[in-house]
Image (cartoon, rainbow, N blue to C red; front, top):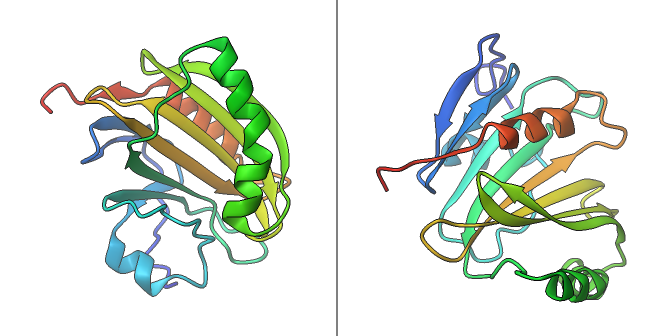
Length: 180
């Protein structure tokens, strides 16, 4: 990937996603267009989009030794967010097998819990994937217009460039676009 494609920036700014939310991007994070993403497949670990028609990509431009950038993908889904403790528990119990079938290998699920994001119910999943060669932290949030929104952070372990903390801050500041 060329250095101009992922230029580092020192100022924080709001990113307005066509998926209906706004995120305050911290230093070193920027949105990446699909054409830049296509040119850079060898430097981004790109999880499957699950057949999503619309995706956004945000990238932590801080260099990492292996040349792979930590990234956050956003996509809409019809999947419901578990709406009770019993459904959260059963979802979390089923996830290792579902992820294994999806990725074609066993995964190590380290976290699965309900949370609130942007005033909406959500689910946090964190696992290690040797197929992707990294850790994955996935947030499933009820979308204001129905369905849900997946935010999937693919990051290095250990998290030397602070991607988890940066994404947690983005989500703490998450705003919904009220014009949609």
